[in-house]
Image (cartoon, rainbow, N blue to C red; front, side, top):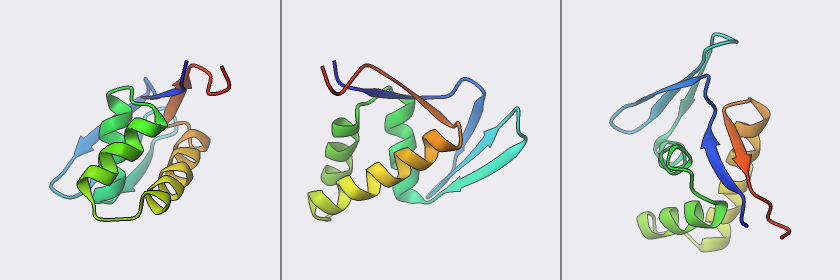
Length: 93
């Protein structure tokens, strides 16, 4: 089963016109995502897999898939490290 990403339960999101503001409630820390980051967050909030996120971004932006994949991996790693997202499933299965 592929890994799916989910918004952490203790994170509030405020989508704006071209960005998204996140609040990690326990730490009382705000995070700002640009338009591309907001698109990733939207997919994460829907429980998307990494490949689904990359596909959504490739359909939305005229960028090489490898570039999108690298940026997505970097952002997901940062969101995980900051406790803003969780993941389920196992990519190695």
